[in-house]
Image (cartoon, rainbow, N blue to C red; front, side, top):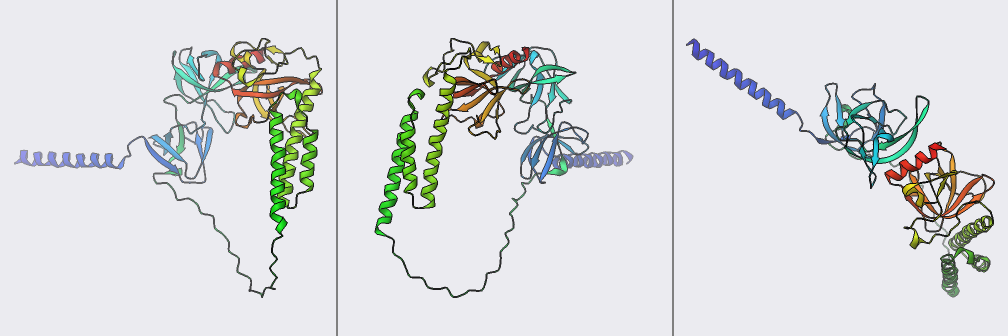
Length: 403
């Protein structure tokens, strides 16, 4: 009888424990899973706790991929888009396509921040031969000395952390802004106005304006695809002014003024080219054709007085692209910065060359090279600009830091 009671007790205990364990497994989420930020601003941090520096800030509705949960309520998530880590450039051997091989043993990967300069947290150590992706390269001041470091894509096993109360498994509904509706004013009898038929000449005048404007625009396009030395805009400017004089609506006047502004921009490029054509700058002033951009120039490219070597030498100048804010009319809109954030060269893009997507990146620029004596800096009319590969970035910045 005692044995039977014990057996029943053991069975009941086992059943209860089994049910409890199964229930706990049912309550626990399976990792990884997707969750959504449920507040307007949620800091992502370099570790599980507020004592760790923030690396990013997410907004309501942003999705995160959760890999584990800390007992304190913090969630380890996949690093958000544009996250990065820091590694010294000396321990990387760039290969191609922005990739590099780790050339050291147990190299610390320092968690980077998009919000501040912090980089003290190390979660992962890279092994020799491991491949990483180079995002950018920048000089950092370490213990009073300037060193070249690389931003890399966060390596495998490196997380960012967000507080669990800031996310939810269910995507929050979008916030619909409230619209204030003013009460309607009491209706007042409207004064009847006679219907005025449009003039028979109105349509003809509009058609003539469009035709004249298009003719000048086409002539401008045909002129600027020729060699810059042949550019002449006096006649086109007079024709555009006549089109403006004959404009009859605000829309027509705006379109005509825009055309005059385009002509003025090309005139400014031509004026700069003529002004620097006779200066003895000691550098190559070749006029690169877009079809010949893949071949390296005979003369070396320079970066603030330092000859560039390797793949970077195929450009007229390399550096971090930034915008220029100047009160001077017709100032170059862009500049290339060196490792010390000083301008290497000023850049004016040729028509059709859009540099804005490259802002903040290390780029190589090729084109017509000139000189701005008032700043004692080079000026490049850019025909080509492209982001540098990892090896190009490191080599160019090392060249700049040697000067």
